[in-house]
Image 1 (cartoon, one colour):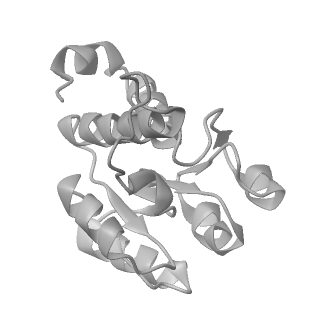
Image 2 (tube, one colour):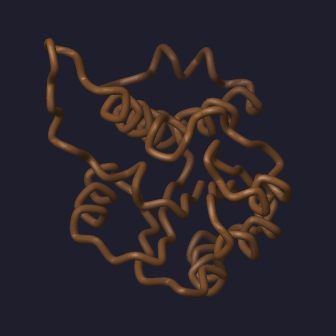
Amino acid sequence: MLSSRAQPLLGRTPALAGGEPSEAERGISHDGQGLTLAQTAGLRTGCITGRESPALLRRAYEMKMEFIYMKQPVKLLAYEDVLKKAEASDHEVAFIGDDLPDIPVMRRAGLAVAVGDAVPEVKRIAHYTTRAHAGHGAIREAVELILRSKGIWEEMIDKARA
């Protein structure tokens, strides 16, 4: 499972108001839980982004992502490298995207997911569009979709860990 967005992976120090995390902080937490569930289920995760960010790199390592590609103006080259390293084929990959540079990869991936706030062109080619926006639980929603389709969602609930 690959994501094109850096934002959902970037942790923030929670700014608590009345003891409750903000909606954005809860979304990031949900995305982190989604990545943890994916890995517990044996899914390999990664990120291909056009940006370079020490915070993203730190968060990607924290989330134990296997494939991390930054400063990738042409994401298809990084995607092909992932396929080679993972010894996987297109139909085995889920890719989550939001903008035009993601379209070539999404056209090849077995499951192309658009986040809720993706541009219309990305939503048109996606197999699924999340209700959640990037950074607000979209990755978590996509992971649940995959685990439900594999018939292991209920099993994974019992294995969920913080």
